[in-house]
Image 1 (tube, rainbow, N blue to C red):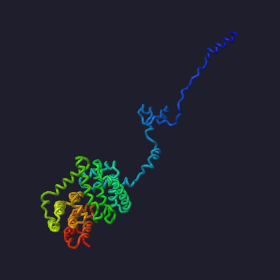
Image 2 (cartoon, rainbow, N blue to C red):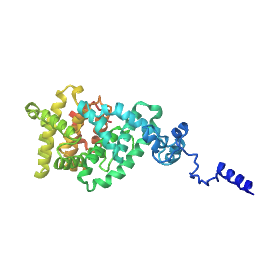
Image 3 (cartoon, rainbow, N blue to C red):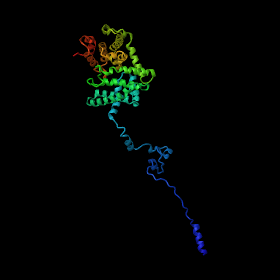
Image 4 (cartoon, one colour):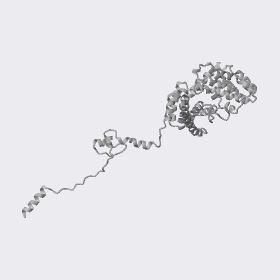
Length: 380
């Protein structure tokens, strides 16, 4: 009996009862980051970067979604339109150079305007529309494609901008000004045989001629609110060109004295006559300046300085098809003809003088013999 007790005691002493231990449980996972898998350590799967990767300052693959995930999320919402990329590339590599000969303005078109367009849909679409018309001139095999895309972007841009133009806010003025100027270039690049509304208006003359009144109004609003901004370069350039054209020798020019005599003798309304006199004075300066200058030194913007000056006074009379206004406008077509070297203006002098011709009687047609001769147009 004692022996059995001793054996029991010995067994208990040598082999103590096993303690029951509870193993800590953890969730099994197969979604560890690749870095943790490679190092064979646990991953807490914290996103966008797990703690192990942060601790060791290594890149966690949780930070970069898989290609398939990106494709699945973006493909329906962001289709890649290659022709739009082509148009934007063309604008920033080539088109911007055709919009001015001034290096500062070219830089503005290439960089500052593009930055504005990134945040403004109708400015970006206007850029693409102008670029499309530019490419259409040089690639006849794809001309219809470019024109179709250009017109599409122009219509979408116009729909958005026109609503804002009715009551422009200060914060929209710069974008609307850019849109308006680009719309002029777009219209200039449109084939003149087109019957679309943005080319031929109710007056029989292109609508872009009358667009400058809106541009001038926007520019005045901008000048009231800020003296800086991307448009300051345009304002400074235009001011310098206006001053150059109003030097004494240009103001004293007798180049259109006969026109002034005829208009003065035919108009009896004093208010209307004062508008014509101002328009003729400004046109005298611009014609003298342009004809005396080397054509390569002329900027495309010089073609519109006169129209800009008389936009709010003279242009409404032209829209009403007043005879004297039509005759004065015929003389302004010489300005466009002096810059035939610019792709945007090619053929416009002849086209507009032909429009003038169809709106005058036989007697009035004798008033425009000088512009016809200068332009080299042959009447029917």
